[in-house]
Image (spheres, rainbow, N blue to C red):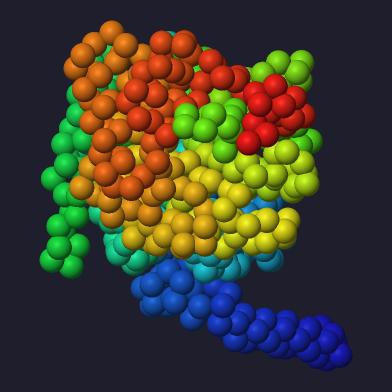
Amino acid sequence: MPPSSATNIGCSLSAVKQSEQKFFELIESLPMVAVQGYNKKRQVVYWNEASRRLYGHTREEAQGQLLEDLIIPDYMRAGVIKAHRNWLYKNISIPAEEIEMKHKDGRLIPVYSSHVMIKQDTGDCEMFCIDISLQEQKKAREELYKMANYDDLTQLPNRRLMEVELSARLIEADRMKRAVAVVFIDLDNFKLINDTLGHHYGDKLLRAVAEALKTEIRSYDLLSRFGGDEFVLLLFDFDGAEQIHELLRRLIYKLDQGFVLDGECYQVTASFGVSLYPDDGGTVAELMGNADAAMYQAKEGGKNSVCFYTSEINDRLVHYQEVTALLRRAIAVDSLQLYFQPQIDLKCGGVGSCEALLRCFDENSQAVSPTVFIPVAEKSGLINRIGNWVIEAACKQLKAWQGTALEKIRVDINLSGRQLTNQHLADHILQTLQNHGLTPAQLGLELTENEVFGGDEGQIRQLERLKRAGVHISIDDFGTGHSSLVYLRKLPVCSIKIDRSFLHHAMKNDGDMAIMQAMITVGHRLGLGVVVEGVETPEQDNLVRELGCNQAQGFLYARPMPADQMPTFLAGFGSDN
């Protein structure tokens, strides 16, 4: 061989050596990239420092070991060997992918793995694996998944995960012809605890309730926090409604034991509503809605109880939704109306006041009974908006009557207990009167005795302020609630209105007559005016006069009427005096 040829070969070999050296220096300098080299028998021929950090094996421990014995999980062994052979003998390369490799201590490490085959045309080919750890990315994904699917406070599955799980279980239940139960759980009076003790204790209590509920359910059932103080329990693979009843009885008993928070014991109860698949709905939304409706029925039935969904509950729910929609529409288009029923002064025969009665009409102009829409307004929270409308409408009407024969008539409006809880109610009423150029004496307020006697000190102070300003305050339906005659004298009340039922019974029963007479006597002794409702016959009129009532109201004198009929009524009634 000529000297020049030998020299060229030597230079070529030297260049290859230098290239390999630079290659190994490069991959050794990559702290986050694990690189391993394997010969055609899959034995380790190279193991960089990053591989030690990632997989736990030192270079000395790894040297000469088989790939499948070193870092390949058992379930992947056969596939890895086959893939390596296909690359060697069939030139089918191994694609890069996210996989899990085995650490020295046995745990699985998520990596992004790619592969390079060098010297493939020689008998000494080598495969290099380049692995990048995905542990941080996996941890971040797990955290994001947890944040998206689990409640941060209780660590329970949240509403989203619960609905996804329920949807999947419904498909399985349909295939297996099995039932699924959705249980809506709402803590009773939790808001009172939260408001009284603060959110810190409220959160502690919610965590304690979640732990207590978890101890009673099976591992394959799912308890989730729906939101606020509401939980949803999904029950699978049960034998009939009685098994559900038994579980929920245990949950009620568990909650009844109370919870010790910072050394103090707190009691909490819950209302449970249950819907069953497929009987009570075929979708997640239907089952959830019906379980929720059943839960509200349990609350209305006295709380701390269980109610299973029925078609009657659905009928009530549909009715509630229809009336709620009607009220919202009436508020939006201002189609509510006040009717006025005169209250007759039994001594002078004139009309000194009238009660403003709210009327609501449907899209066909048919009147909806107050016994229907008032409870819905209370439950839906619309009562405050409606109450404000009534205050405004009554003041507008009083303003319109100024300068007419009706200008001296007081208008009495009905207040609900919910309105009374508004700490700005007195300010609002007095400001509305002032806005219309009216005096407080032109307006009266009627509240049931349960609302007055059940009020707290703040509510009583509001009534006192209104009375001092000149607003007339009456207790409506007196005798039908839980009144205390001793407490009555301490309240800022101007008059009592005896419920119509007492008058009707007094005409037939001496005992009821005595009760009615006693109420009138007590009212007068306390310096209160006494009004009797429901006078419909001349005989009843004679009785209330004999008993010394101050005023009477009823169909005998006048039915409730629109404002534009009041002048005609007053002229015909002879109220010029």
